[in-house]
Image 1 (tube, rainbow, N blue to C red):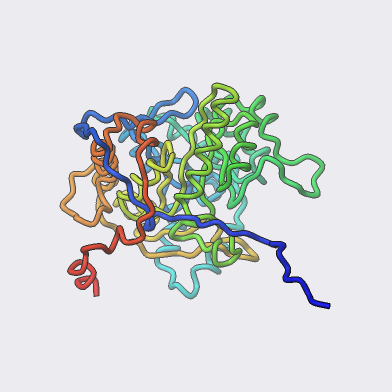
Image 2 (cartoon, rainbow, N blue to C red; image 1 turned 90 degrees about the vertical axis):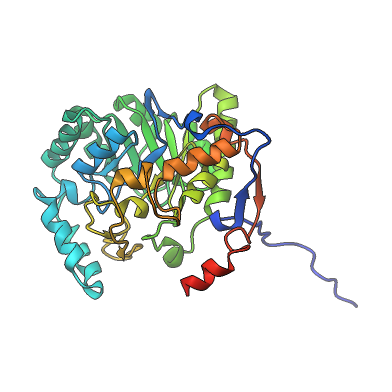
Length: 384
C-alpha cells in the first residue's frame, strides 16, 4: 500500500511590496511642475497640498496645527494625548525629551495615566479655530463616544478615529461598540477612520459612510507593532489594495472616499510612490517631527508607546533639520530628498504627465528592488 503525497495547501502567500522595492515609470508626456494641481479633499474641505500629519504628541500641538493649516496642509491634533491631559503640555514634552532612553517608556506610561480633561479638549479646538484654519482632531475608538460631542460643540471640522487596526465590525464584551453609521448621524463633520491594509476591510469601512480611510499598519518610524504583534502589509501593496476598494466603492455609489497612506515615509520619493500607488494624500510623522516648530523637540514616539501593559512604540531621536515650510515646500539645499516634499511630488507628477493627483494614480509602476542602489556605488561608499 503506497501513500499518496498530500496535495492540499494550508496557506498560500502572495508577494507584497514596500517603497524601496518599486519605481515609477516616467510618462510619454511631461508637464511643468508648477502647472500640476495637488489639491486634496475631505468632505467639503479642500487642501492645496496632500499632506496630513500623524496625530502624535511629538508632531502636533496647537501652534503647529495652525502653521500647517496656513501652509495648505491638514494637521491632526491628538486629543487622547498630552495636549488634553495637561494645562501646560510643553513642560511634559520637555521632560520626555530630556529623559534617558532606558527610563523614557516608564515615564510615558506614568504621564499618560493622567485623565483626559473635557475642558482642555474644548480649549485646544477653539484655539485652532480662532486662528482661522481647519481643525482636525484624533480620538481613539474607546474615547470617541464620550469626547466627540465635546469636540463637535467646540467647533472642530474633521474627526479622525484611529487605532492600530480598525474594522467596521468590532467584537467586544460591551453590548454596543462604536458604530460608524450611527456616529455619522450624531456628529456633524467628516469622519476619517484608520487604520487598515486590505481591500475587504477598506471597502467595508467605506460602506459605513465615512469620509476617508487611513492605510497602514506598523510602518511608522516610531511604531513597533510589526515586531511586537507581527501585523502589517508593506505600504505599496496596502495602498494599491485599498485604492482598489475606493474605486469599487465609487463605482457602487458615485461617492469618492479618499485614502491616506499613513506611515513609512522617509524621502520625497516615497511620497511620490504612494500617490502613484493610489493614495489621495499621505500622513507624515517622523518627517515633520524634524521641523523646528514640532513640539517633540527633536524626538518622536508612537501613539502606542505609553500602553501600560504592551508598549508598541519607541521614542526615536530624529533631530531638527529645518522649518516646517522648508521640509514641505522648500527651498532647500539638502540633496537626500528629506525636504521640499511637495516640490518632489509636483516634479514627479510633471515627469509622468499627471496634472492632478487622480491622474498620477494612472502612472505605471514597476517592481524594482535595485532602484535605490543601481549606479549609486559612490553614494553608498560615502555612507560607510
